[in-house]
Length: 627
Image (cartoon, rainbow, N blue to C red; front, side):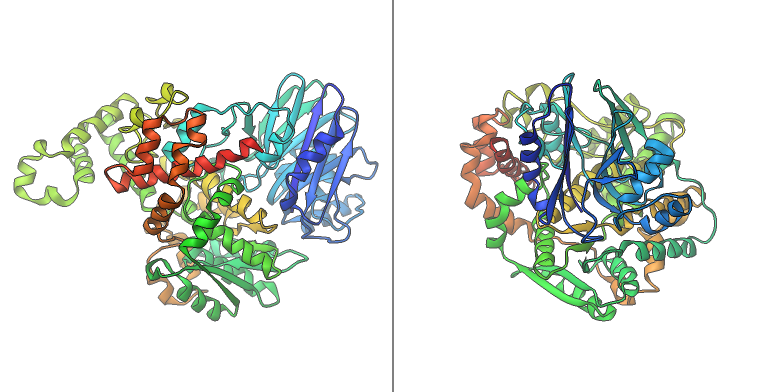
């Protein structure tokens, strides 16, 4: 829907500060703006009109105007909530989905967010209690950054808007940079700026007039109630419900169609309830048939009766847009597929479709990634080794490391001489050192071994820092792994770049598979039936087979995957010199030797290309520090 920002202070709030922050989010809301000011607080928004085009302007008030609301996002169950509230005597003045929030707050206070089904970041000023509530949706679809000290609190939907206030130090956080190079993004609640944080998903803050903050988590994925019954029937019912809610809009709705199961399922669910012909958008790659899914996507579009649009991307298109896309992500996110997502949303807006559905979340919730299953298997072996002293488990662990070579009798006899033995011993040592540590993400290949030769003074103290995740005794490993992937890779790579890149084109991205009721259903079924993930994404494929052609299920998974080596080589040739004279050197992130190594390429391209790509993303991203 829009972008929101605000400023709360013990002193006087300058209107110009709020106006400047708000203008920096013009792309998130080109249809207009809204403001609210008192002596010690200022709130604002940019509007992208989606529901109640004429009357849905913000701020939104309750009946006596004691509650002042600004919201980014959409409340999908607003029709049902409004009917219930009207029965209890509440009077509405607009047709906006956001208005239900002020009336729910009148009844439930900050806990009102528990009734909301959708994606949202909320700022609500309680004029009588002198309390500001900031809240974020359960899966983190809508962002909210904030800065807080003893004299002021500032918040915004985007980091660039927050920094444009001119009131926040732009000092970089070295630990965040370290995490970026390891994982290609910065996990929440960290940001690249030392003093700025992200409000975690499923969390609200209450800030009083003395700027004291009370933080509350109102939902946890792992607390999803146990559900029993036929998984296919239960999930099909929930998906149909989501399909009905997700298309609520007063402007055209389209779908990003990659040709995979998830996006095709979303297209099938939404198009049959939309009531008119839906538009579908996909990308293809010039001269790269192995990466191109246009043929598959067009066949699915024809099968579902969709209006099909294809966008062909060339290597030159990618390199031309690369610096801009790096900054539009608002966070440093090293994903070469970002240009594809950006191009789809750009085409969507050009064709007059400002709401776009996407299939994010299916792989994370239903374990479509093979490495998640490998992580689960590794932890199971670890438990057998550490807790039970199982020697067979040690052999199975070694087999995972060195592969099928163990099947040869001579290799089996001399396995201690294999190169994999040292790695095997190291893994055993690490497993025993942290009995409850989950082996979740490994560092990018070559990151640790090249650390001292690449990185500069800002990064030195973090050379030996590692990150892991501990589990409590009450957490089952499979549920915890699902939570971890949702709170890390999905949230900070998929969801974050989806929001920023779509909103940079003034397009609202909706993710039906992240509806929290659907998430609870999948997790609840998993608690009662651990076999539903026996085959990757079985839980979704069983339902999708009734809606989509059978041939689709025999096609390898690709997504919007570009020709990686060709594009990276082109970047190296066009922008490689930036690394030896730009931001990374100036901030002390890399040293001069490291910049030269990255520019020329390390010996092993499989190591050098990813490290170079990460460095170049950060190099251009840091241009926003000068804005």
